[in-house]
Image (cartoon, rainbow, N blue to C red; front, side):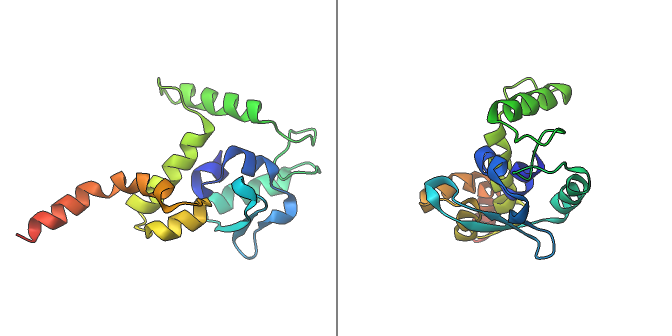
Length: 151
């Protein structure tokens, strides 16, 4: 869940990660053949770094970075159920799905970190800028306030 939330990976991208794709020394996650068959690198933020180091220390050997405790690759259905369980435990009544974590990451990058939209586009692996522009709602209130000050 942390990889989807802090690195903006799609569920399938997170599940496809191989151990070699997580470069803790270079602070990068390499997404190989993401949606559209594109490769990209996503930086590892501090909050994610700790989670990845903790998992790497206990993860069983397996073909993918994220596995069951027995070493088998995780499935998308398992992740969807896990995200739903965690949301219910947190008292969230709405339906929460893994892709919402990616949306939250994008909104954070644009709204809080103030990354330019074209940089977020690259990090998310969007083919079209218009796919990324929908996250601009995060900065709209600040833009309105700024524009009012121009009067």
